[in-house]
Length: 370
Image 1 (cartoon, one colour):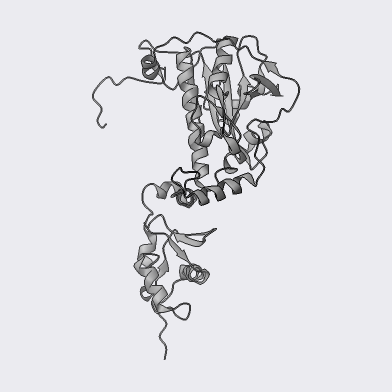
Image 2 (cartoon, rainbow, N blue to C red):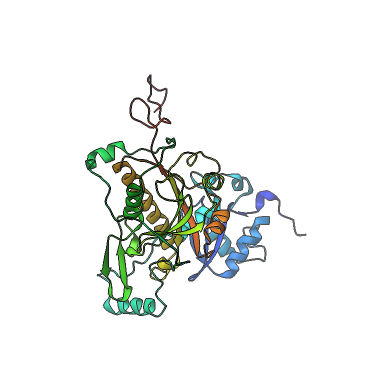
């Protein structure tokens, strides 16, 4: 008589278990384990079946050797071990973040000078076989408010810029001048020079670093209190250095709603939603790591925004807490290839007696922990 195995005799799939279909085949992983396995479909089927338990001998589902191998690698565990937490930070971030983390690791570098010449030639031919995306966004309208190309005073020593840069969430209800506003957009989002990159096309060289100088970040500007510019939402044209009207009625309430009412835009002089035109990046960089690079690039832009505001005597803040779907729709983005990435605020900062933002409290006594 065959005895039915109890739970103590069964092995179960580690929880959480992530199975991904990649160009190289199926990959199984778990944020509880250091190992990722490339497996055949029948092994993935075994792991899925093992959510209900499998005997060490395979129980007719798989060969005992496959079960033993998965058990040694930690993918099949006794029932009591399936309740364990994944561990920091994946217990908080979850399997979606874990999948992104794995997909963007160990990229082959495109165009290395040490590449085999034949391989490099093949890469360049493959890139050139696809239409090169425009480095600038096509104008939506013939109407554009051209901004002055006059440099505002920016004579603060760089050391002072580094020491004074802080996140400002509280702004005076005061306008900023047109020249200062123009300089903010120019240095943060416009090309300062151009470079001939052969088959890669003419590249923009901006103040912010960008992988491969792809500069996939576009700026949508909410003018709130700028001298000489009517309030509303505009797209910033970085080559013509001007503002294209998008939504004249979009203002403070719109931005506060899109950023969950954090208060950054109640008195800011202007705000910016940055958006990624992802095909500028994916045209050259085909590996998923390019997505991580794209997010790093907008971080470079945000830092230039914050430092430039400091040099001009302004304050800036930024947030990634955005109602993405609503923001994408308002900006008229071509979803899902284009998507909102950051929200930036700028204005005349309110400071405390120590010169710091009002939101910063200096410790008055030794803290219990540090």
